[in-house]
Image (cartoon, rainbow, N blue to C red; front, side, top):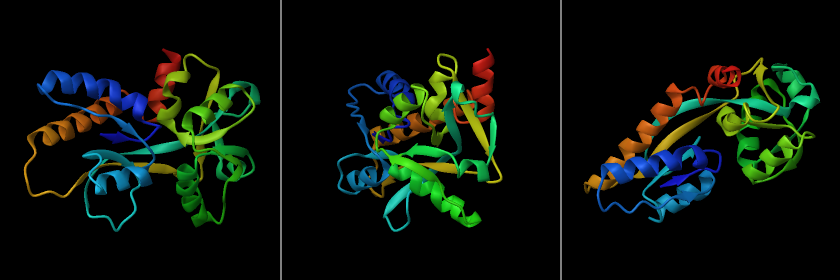
Length: 214
């Protein structure tokens, strides 16, 4: 099973425990990478199923949409950025970005003739998260990435008005006419994990605020 670095810490623990309980003698291997590498691994048979972010067309894979997740501007509270920023304000704020998220967001901003002001491109979600928590830097990330930090750290998750920035999460497998019962079980378990997390509000602003206040 392949998952992106923004989702691995959310998906793998529950998926592992549920797969052990559901299927005896199932060998589950977890791989973490960004979408282009996950697609390559799928097509080469190195993994059997992957959660992809906005997969590009032109690949002979089977796709099952999981959910759409909004992006937020993430900052430390000491920076004084409010809970809502306009798209015009966003484009004036220096941000740290992964190359994948930068591409997704800039393509969506291009419809308004705007683009991000990228301070640095860092293909390490953990590194960007650490820099933001140090209090001097901002990023634009899917809301689930900072899910665990809203109650523990002085983090502000700002909604972006004037445009709906989001990513589409898709469950992908190779197209294979031969039935694979174990793969079918894992497929259903992954879908179940995302349904559970979506009910908890992990992929929405409303869920973040509820947890921050509880």
